[in-house]
Each structure stands twice: as structure tokens, then as C-alpha cells.
Image 1 (cartoon, rainbow, N blue to C red):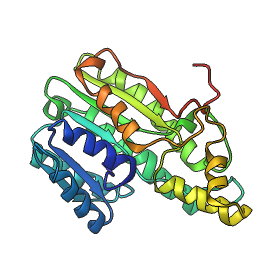
Image 2: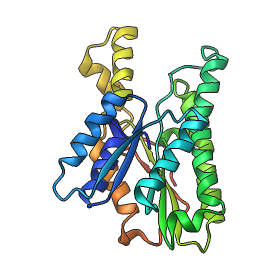
Image 3: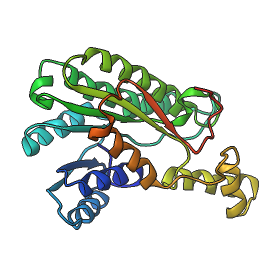
Image 4: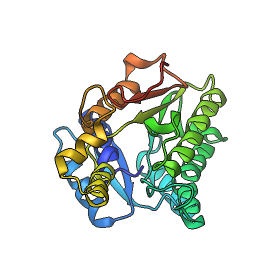
Length: 255
């Protein structure tokens, strides 16, 4: 889901490199077509498809799932990823911002989870499978400018834990990956905002974004994709119901 660019596309590319048939979605048909074209160029490509869908719309989520089942018949791995929300504080964000964030981040995950946990679970996943939610390292911390994202994505972490319990005995594992700052469009916008708001040059703005990270750099999208590839692989069959933070050590949490 939501994989025409950024972290979602990196994950799709990683799975396609493992010869998986991949279905991705996005709101922009031009970006989506380019992403599918790039995936189909991968050696040994098993088949890659794109479906135009806006995850903030209930009808689009239904269409996405129905077409995916028509294309693949069943699902081995479901990666739930969605767009980024505006930066802002409680004072600056309006009701429209909150409503859009709720639909795009939380309810899109809820609707997909409802299908996966319902009577069609055995039909969708057969005897085993993986669900991976792409969240944010910030779900554990309440910093100001990412308020919308953190509140909604914290709910996704709870949802995933509940679903792992609900699917007990089905052979389906549910996990969350929580990335910190990665070299994607959202971070580029944050860097540009610092340049404008505080008059910083690009190098200083990048350092400001990464300063709490002991590695002193921003993550590369392929690094997150490798983590997802491991989670859904045979070497991680005992990994279930957990949230894995991948942020270079920027989180202040002990565990």
C-alpha cells in the first residue's frame, strides 16, 4: 500500500528483488506508473502491478483490496503504509488537519486490519502470512511538530498488537517498523522548512534534523526495506506482535 515513492517504494523494490509478485498503490497515476515500470525492470520480476487509490477514502481501500485479491488470489505479505501529515502544534492544526490525518493514517489501517481479521482471513492468507505496519519512531515520544503523525501512529501500534492476538493460531504474524528520519520527501520538506524559517543553509539544516542521532546521519530508505525483508522472511518466524524502532539510536527509550 502507498508505495509509489519513498519508504514504501523501497520496501516494494526489496520484496520484488526476492521474486515476489507486488501490488502497490498511490494517488498520483504518473508516479505510480513510473514506480511499476521501475519494479518490472528488476531481474527475475515475478509480476508487479499498480492500483490508483487514496487511502483516506473508504471506497478506495475497498477497491484496492478487491483488485489485489483478483490479481494475486491470496496474500503472503501485507505492508500497510500511508502518507505523511502536516507539521504543526495543537494551536496551529485545524479540524480539517485532524480529520484528514485520522482517515489517512489510522482509519486506513483499521479498514485493512478489519478485513484481515474477519471471516476471510483464511482465504486471504491461507495458512500463513505477514502484516507489517510502517509507523514512526516518534510513537514513543511527544515532540511538538509531529503531533498529528505521532497520535495517529501510536494508535496503529496498539491496533497491530491487538491484531497479533486476534490472529493467534492462524499462522499470520503482525509487526510494526518504526523509522526515524530517512532520506525521503518528508524529511526533505522538514529540511527546507528549517532553511526558510531559521535561515539555515542546507548542511546545517540536515545536521539539525540528525543531531540527536548517535550515528550523525539520516537513514537510507533501503535500510528500512532490508529490515522489512528480514521480518517477513523465514529467519524471523518467532517475531510477532512487536514494534521495531529503526532510527540510528535517536530515540531516548531504553526498551
